[in-house]
Length: 212
Image 1 (cartoon, rainbow, N blue to C red):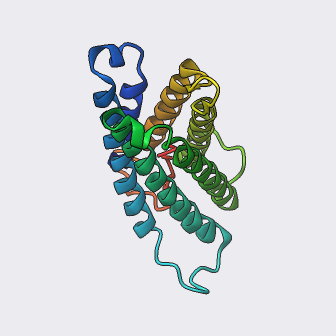
Image 2: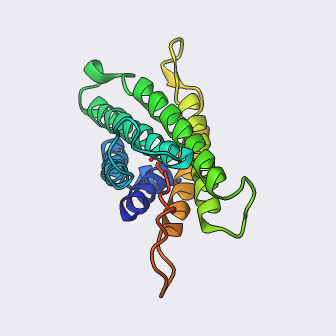
């Protein structure tokens, strides 16, 4: 989806080496926040496209996994909204919002990983666990890789109470950048091939952060 692609680009931009030097910390955090908003818009759209939850609505396991993947992914995007907004406010009101953004960041990363696992399961129900010639296969596994990269970023973003600093800014930025690239590539795979009708199985779940 276009929203996932735009959101991924903004996350990649925010974590690109040298970008922070061109702007200030607040502008960098605003970049992440805007990216999370595009993730949420795309995540909500995807959830709507998978149908409405009702008992007995789906008879197939892949449809059930698709809905839960979209629902959990959407919750993850909301968590990233909170974490990036808190990070932005933390540069303006440091005493009020200092270190409050890590927990929703970690929760969002967990949601993206769970959603990715469900999407892989749904793809496996329809096709196979190993099918590198299928765009849907690449889409789901790229989203899985992006979700794992976002989790790495969240882990190293944890603030050490003794120093007041994250475990590793370098690993945090690398994980965010790698995850954003994976999500962006996966989002491009959602675009139907020229002169071909859209494939309803290409639901995707990128962040996924990504995820988002």
